[in-house]
View: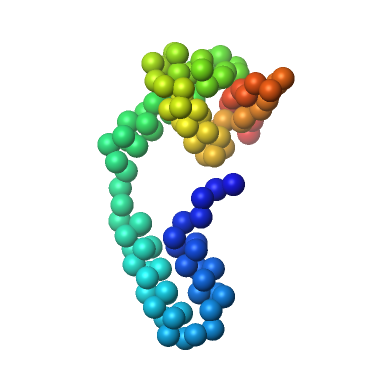
Length: 111
């Protein structure tokens, strides 16, 4: 399950309301949020993580299937960071996540 954004929540609220004035105010707020979100760039950490994700993808491709702990050890990052980056790659459909005997593994997604 993914987190609901404020823009998505506002869209649901706008569709549920019948009060024209409330709908107008919520649509204006939604437009402000969309404009602010569109103008945002990546943070320094996000840019660094993009390079690390590319390296992780190459590592997983060479290794076949890995656990988050393997990635953490290989790249010298915490287990939490390794797990988060692996899950971002799964969300981007670059990796697949699977379990064997209650242990989670990651492998390169098949095209």
